[in-house]
Length: 292
Image (cartoon, rainbow, N blue to C red; front, side, top):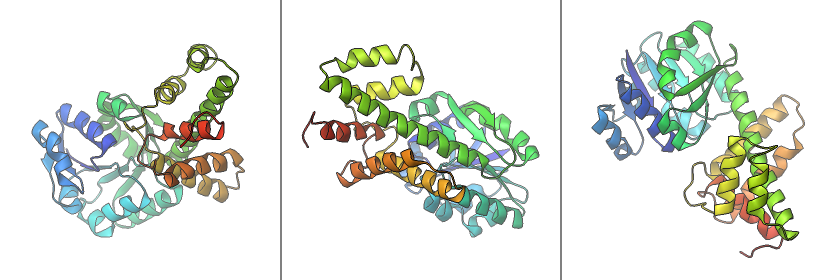
């Protein structure tokens, strides 16, 4: 079966590469076409337009930055170019509202929609160690699961067209909150005369021995914010989507507002393209531990 993969950014590069390395027939597209060159060298086909990429593809994967990018890439004209019965697997972090709208519009055109956002940074994508959250029609999920396995572990969240998107937003809310939590805790111990690296070693190997805590603790301590695995700009976008979903579902989420404001502050300071852990610098400033 021919596959299409649209969106060759930091995440999409590793994900598409895993499919090509698995010996699958993959056509790739990216707005900046030069980013497809490494995949072309590996054996992938490169399309000049989204419509060209999806033509004859039984499964179309998209990994795009936001709602606007998905709409621009997978508009009605592009979806029409997909073969009848083809399945669009949306792996982007988008709003639940857009997921529902896309599922409805795809169905009207005789094409299928599955939500399948992922958890993991670019190194996990390249290694095939992502966590893929999927929801949608049961039969369609069974058809695509063999093609998801090269990218990581699949977790099924039912048949709602947007269920997996809500899972992704909830998870990203937790990750952003953990970065803020670590930043505040590190400032507290440092202002109290305690070595924050020793504190980090303690918490990340005992009661908070989780990969997300270990990863972001190290990023905060090293201050390596320019090597962005996930930018502050994208984190702010996701927290905005979290708050939209909270309003729509009448779910009070006051912490989400605090964390979103922290990311917006980072963007206002010119740090939008730095790693999301850069908000620790703003926290250290507020705690009197550093100057701008």
